[in-house]
Length: 172
Image (cartoon, rainbow, N blue to C red; front, side):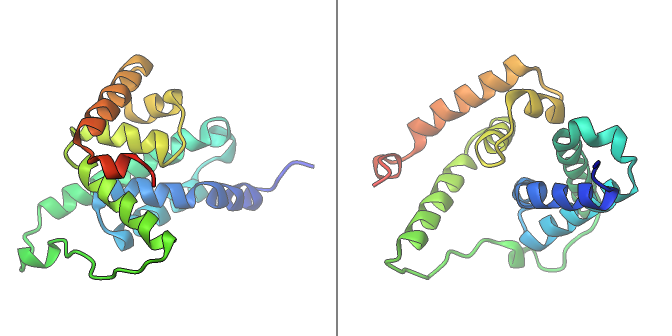
């Protein structure tokens, strides 16, 4: 029995909502705005002919998500915020011995070092390792060739290894 439109959309949300929020975060750097971008992405999926996107759903979702995030950034760049300093990062003061917290802190540190990479390298590395996308899917979403995607990932990881302190690379 073929799945209904609702089942298709529910399954898409179950499979891709979390990776899309992470992907959108790479653009908008704010969890609430990233969730809004993903919500807009799924609203567009609801309006789409399911049969047209079924075969390339993952690429379609990531492309729509990227375009929506870029639309928001363009719109915000035309606006002048009243207080620039309210957007600065503030470091967390929480120090718990719990291993999950330690792991999350290590991830955050690695992401901070990734900010030193060129934007394209950072984006394709996150798409590969955080979002679990294949080179082909990354290529479809970004418009880069598969070889270029591979080169960017390789050189980005090589540079990241040079930047990371030894204690972050050891995995403890």
